[in-house]
Length: 275
Figure 1: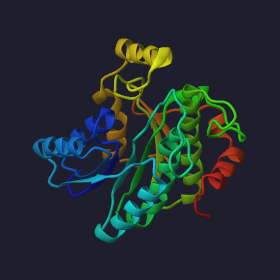
Figure 2 (figure 1 turned 90 degrees about the horizontal axis):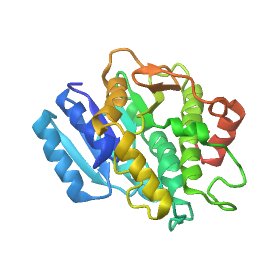
Figure 3 (figure 1 turned 180 degrees about the horizontal axis):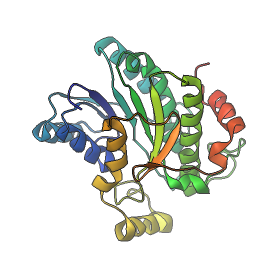
Figure 4 (figure 1 turned 30 degrees about the vertical axis):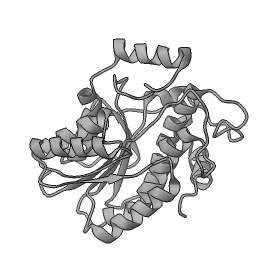
């Protein structure tokens, strides 16, 4: 990864942090995004110690479409290229809340930020020799279902179902973006990190939050194990399959719902993606 620049969202904790350190040890330059400046600076320090030649940090709230858009514009002007974009930041909430822009938080962070950031940075990715976009999805997508009248829990709310839906839309977006990129040198793919004992959902209260916490603690993989497939996709010589879905360093077949071309096309329009 020497000479390459990798942008990682959600880089302060969990698999984002672990992946940053692994990529740093391979010699990659890093652009780290997160909400907490102190945590970003700590990961940056550790990444430099691990071998990264250059690390820069950016405080961005990915639940804000305005902040995501402005960050993309600034990066286009300041960077000569971007080799890898790892859309990794994610959230799971048991309580429904809406952002100041009117989006449900899970939908804004887990789905809309992926779409907006990827499309904002495509011109920068196209300046690299072998650009790649990796999106952290999940096998939880198999429990997701698209209800067009309830995409943001407007009519019926369940935090776990909202999370599963966004992991499904991650794969639908990747497949549609991949179809539109076609033979472009920019490759986009999704990956499943496994059940990881990370900080995802740790702030949730109630029985649902407690059950998920204990599930992670007992059965979860380490953050390093969870980051492994993303690091492999970013660093291996062979390019990912356009629009592919990966787990444990191999391509796998997502659910039937995740392979719906009609839903992927409709999601593209609903998400405000560019023509």
